Length: 128
Image (cartoon, rainbow, N blue to C red; front, side, top):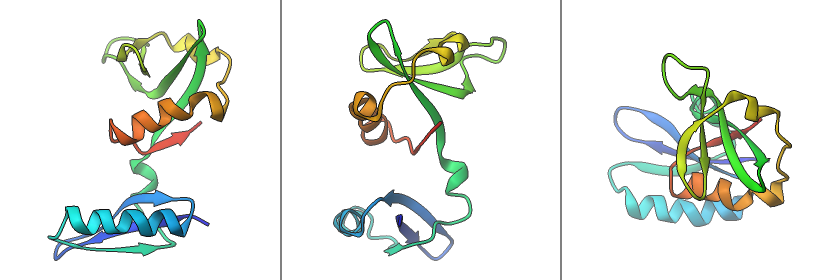
């Protein structure tokens, strides 16, 4: 079961985070309540309808021995077929879409990169 943290103020209700366990959600709920006193935060087993659309599709691959996050729906420019990518070294950059054919990284291999994208860059990831 997935647990969501909801944020409710006078104008809106929104899902702001998700967790695999209630224990994790409860620990982070306290952080949200401390950080944002302008709204009510609570745990729910249902996300708001726009939560899924807020996720960024990402594919983690191994390229030249490095783990790279590829964002297949994010074009690098309006006029190219290149897509956006992210790596520990170099961070965000354009990448050839053909990299999507590289060997898929295992969850163990991409764990630290996924954590960096989530915790430091603010992404909500959908692994594809």
